[in-house]
Image (cartoon, rainbow, N blue to C red; front, side):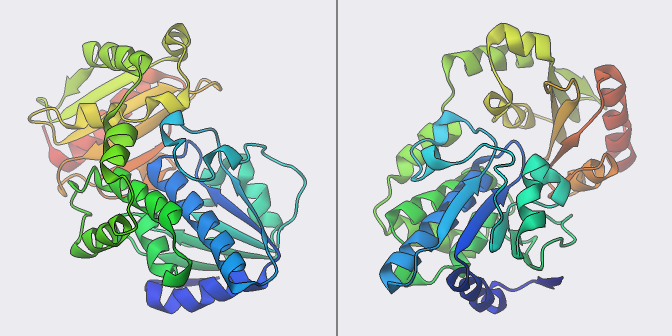
Length: 333
């Protein structure tokens, strides 16, 4: 296992591995978010463009991810994403994107384990490296940004640029979060030069919600709790209520950010219940004073200083109390 911290060093290795493989699978974390979906589809498009333009033997490329929100359906290749957890296939090369731990691949980890060779591109600070070769750059705004840096310009098209820009938008909160760097804006500008509809991407994939999601958000906000003198805002939704509204895990995207923007809040937590009765926890921080990646790691998860997540148990009240205690240790009452 080799871990790289510079995309310039990893770039040649990445492209050589793609050229040598005849079958490639692309994987991402469970409950895929905007950056996960976008980086996967941008890499898929790039590989196909590379094979086509170079005139080399076309590698078979398959993206494996859990079902994601339909708001990302404008992305090229979205409808081709495979949701089967084990087709029995073996691949020459497995490319893992935006995933900080092998357990976060869920049942799709079988494709990584059976692959002849594996690469990982990620920006989670908790990633210790689990592929044969990995590029891990925690300071990067997103995995999509890292992928763009690995691409050779001749094989980038409008579809790939559209996907990369989507990933940037989602992991930077439309370029508002502290992870946004001058290089992030440079990559965004280069994507815009391909003629992408950047306004639509921001409005439709980041800000828009369906009528049902709006109703769910109203329910979450009406029942939200505060702790530590208002420094921590907590929202939650159990499986019974989700069934009542007819929503699934993929519809919970964006709820945490509505909690995070509460005035006076240093951090926010949102828990929703999965079909197996456990709760999925999303954590956000508005200050480097509160490192939510540390908290997520305690519960077996990971992420970034200001955005992290994990799975909890099935006792909502007990889980909330544990979260409050960990936040209290870091920011006080």
